[in-house]
Structures are given as structure tokens and as C-alpha cells.
Length: 385
Image (tube, rainbow, N blue to C red; front, top):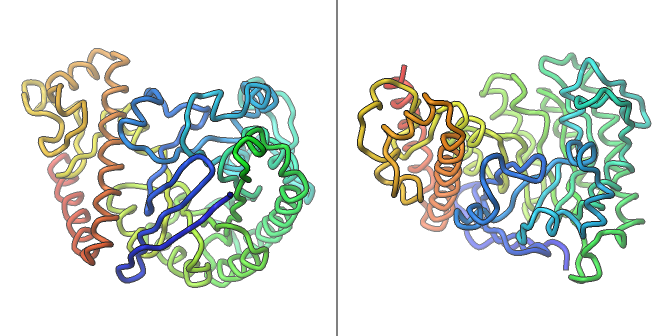
């Protein structure tokens, strides 16, 4: 078995589906917590399971540099290494290399860059990215791509797109030739699923070309990359819509690197099946918490003697036990527990929101949920200002 995708309900463009993978089933639309270095920051794996995180994301670039993909291979693959029995998706490392603009050199063969850890020189080619991801053994792996900065000229976007398409074809060929090297391949009688990444910056015709080129490779799924990198949200929305038109309706569609609650419900309504972002945990580490009434900055003085939970409507273990006053104290005191409890709550809020999205699709009420979330976030932002 590799990947199976079965749609059970629709509401407009939105789809509720089951994504069956070697390490378990994932109900979509799904939000994937980001575990960059084989850990979702401040949250242990057993609590991720308690939160019902169905699938998490880890990163090829970071794990290749530390502790090294060959070490993880010797440990039996990433699932065993980090004691996570559920599905994992690994990013190709392309976005991380993109972020090292002053430390990299891009050629048709791949990318040469210096490690952000120690300055050592490394080469990432499509083949090497696939080798690393096969050593890690994730259920879903991503084709090596180049993420274009914003703003980008059309010439720059065109050049980058040609590289991404060539690298996707090389990634696919390498995976097909070397699938047997995956640690759990024989144990589970399963295989990894390679997703292509649509690029094209903010040019709708290039997005269409990219989607059509990658669809011709007949991959198990497709991602939309290169967005949420500084462009206005209206442009993000337009590029997503223009890309989804040309992606297969019978395969999973993954939007990379988003976003705030009002964004993820809207993108699910547009037909996106999978999303990921560091936002819930990163925001939590800075005191920004997400609730059923919108976002709140727990560091505000008004919470210093507030005996309510973060969110009275939230059933998570943090809201069942701790008060806003205590959370504010932890942040003011610089206690590590602040990040732990904040991250647990924010992830619970995001994952519960996706439960609501899936239920709304089944009931045909998703448009109402989208409007409700959008309104509450605007009201909360105004109240916190």
C-alpha cells in the first residue's frame, strides 16, 4: 500500500476525505503541526497523540544537517527515531535553502549552500533530497523545488519555474529507481508517496503551466508552494484559486506554510486538503493564543487576575486546569512551561477547528463557519489592539 484518497463529502469546492497512508489514516481537510527537527517544539509525542494530531511534518534540510539522515536510517527511520507511529510528511529542504539567500548558489544541477549551524559547505540536488527523505522514511515526501522570493520579476519566476520542473522530474525518477531503500518499505509492504510542488510566483499563467507540467508526471499528490512569503493575502488567495483549477480532483492537494485560523478555513473551502504552519507553536512562544472568540495576547495586563481558562469553550488539558492569570505569570517570569502550555492549547485550537471544518463540509454549512471565523478574528484583533 502507498497512498489512497477517498472523498466522502463535498460542500462547494471543499472536500471531506480520507487519506490512507502506510502509518495510518488521515481525515482531511487536515492541519499538520510542524516538527522541523523531529519535534513539534515544546510538545512531546504522547501529547500530540492526545490532541489527535493525525500527521506531522519534519524537515529534510534540518535533519540532514543534524543528526544526519544516515544516523536516522540506522535507527530504523524517523518514525522509530522520534517514537511517532502515525504518518509523517517531510519537506524537501527547498524552502530552507531559499531562506539562505546570502549563503547559497543555485545551478541547474542543484543548490550549494553553507550550513546555518557551522558554515560547512553542502550540496543539495534533487537526487540527494530524495535520498535523505528515503532515509528518513516519511509517508509523504516532497519533490525538490526552488521557492521564488516576493516580489519576483517574470523573468526570475520563469527561470525558477524551469528549474523546479526539471528537478521534479529528476526527483520522481530517482524515487522510482530507489524506493526499496526506505527503512520500513518491506516491513509494511508499503511505499512512499512523492508530491510535486507547484510554483510560479504571483503569475497566474505560470501557476497554470506549473500545475499542468507536474500533473503530467502522474504523482500521488500535489502541493502549492511559494506563497505566504510576503505577498498580499488577496494575491495568495488568487494564486491558490488559479492553481486548484488545474490540479486533479481525485488526488490530495496540499497548501504549504499557512496560516491563521481565518485563512485555513477559507482555503479548505476553496478545495485545499492539507495545510501546515509553524504559527500555532511559534505564536504560543510569544504569548499569542487562539481561541473560539479569536486571538488573544496573554501577556496583556488585563489578564493578570483573570481566573478564566484561556478559552472557556475549549476542552484541552490546558483550559481544563490553568487560568489566564497563571499563564500570564509564566510568560512574565520567562518560565519554559509558558511555551509548553501555550503550544498545547494553540495546537488543540487548530486541530479542533479542522474537526469543525470537516463536520461543516458533511453538513453543507462550511460557508457559515468561514464567515464566523473571519468575523471573530477581526473582532478579537480590534479588542486586543
